[in-house]
Length: 375
Image (cartoon, rainbow, N blue to C red; front, side, top):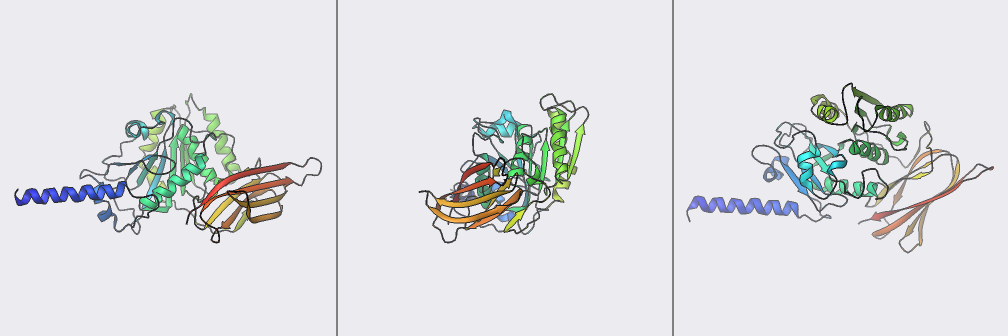
């Protein structure tokens, strides 16, 4: 065997070994990133970026595109787009996403400067359905993705079309601290108040001739968002339908990506806050964020009227661990933090109980959710 063949064989082994390490990294292992050029050299083809299949994340499987263009990276961290596909791409086959998921050819695009994340929704549910705990699934999925890829968490943007357009609103409302901007396409609401997402900049798109989701449904949600103080730009395509005439035109618009890059998440550290500008329409308890966590997590809930409130933490055996709240609260949205530093790793239950102060017809509500402390 001549010297050239030996060098070629050694290089092939190194590339395969590096790729294997990347793809099989344990969920609990934090990858240490250096310069994007060195760490991701083996993940890019010579012709440009190509999709990486990520199948061992919690929550969802996904395709991820790592850019060759590093002009928008800051300290080695890239802006990222989370894209939610429509109903036709649900299932267990990531190849469907390559063919039909995002209505724009990104593979090999040298200029696209974002890390592009495309999870796949299982066929048993939809992004915004409550028959599955999609909030927890998405929280865990994003935690895993953020631990593996050099993503700037202050420049994470969410978008989606059709079912994904509805889902993008759903996740922005339930996980508002995650996203720097929201871009829903061909969307509607599903009975939720958009108030929790009011600080997120929104650029929304819809077709006037959409026969699946009428323009009136999209306009209704936009009006609700503006009513609670949200800022939204709403573009309507006069001849757009529920098809490529709306979403392909949207995602081929370079101004959209320039707009995203001008948005950055505002990080606010809060121990307890109440929204005085709007009131929830119903009693609500959101999934804690982050989850899993170590050691601090935030629990958000909403009260439609003044109530006597109790928020308690229990271990998996039902033993009370801590009482976070036991007092009267006015109507509004609240965020409370729990510090589990003194507790062991494991699954815990948080329970919110509220009895309204309406003497004529007091309402008693109770909700519980699971959280995971992982040290």
